[in-house]
Amino acid sequence: MSTTLTSPSASFGMRFNLQSGTAPAISGATISQSITPTLAAGSSSGQVQLGTIINISVVNGTPYTLNLISGTDVLGNALGLATFVGFQLTITSSGGGVLVVGGGTHPVMGTDQITTQTGGTIQTVQPGTGWAVVSSTSDTLQITSSSGTITAVLTLFGR
Image 1 (cartoon, rainbow, N blue to C red):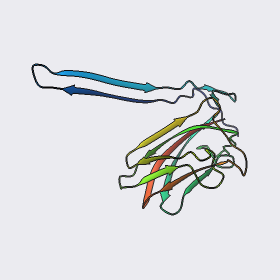
Image 2 (image 1 turned 90 degrees about the horizontal axis):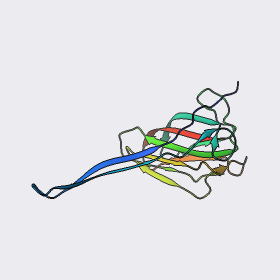
Image 3 (image 1 turned 60 degrees about the horizontal axis):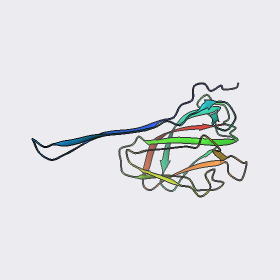
């Protein structure tokens, strides 16, 4: 069975208010930043043809490793990625700890690593070239825990 991806989208935003001073001379500002990379369905640069979401549990000393070729999507189909476009990782457990994405054997992101702490979310999307997925060379996404067991939700895009 094949999987068809439609309407891909990725975004991240932050908004907050700043206030300074005391009455009657209070000054304030609203800060808002939103990043929404343009993604389309397909297999060319700037496009994605697969997305999936995975609930993971990472134990300190035992990295979670996802093979981007033979690993499976939420429907049970092989990922079969040729290009890794990006991911979002949100820690869902409340205990302390840090997750590191990247590294390991055959890392798809080369030497790049990204870290998030308890309650954190990290996201990276490279819609143009992405990262090439090459069997036995750069075909895994590894996530390690700094302590204990940390649960998270991993969402990824590729083509």
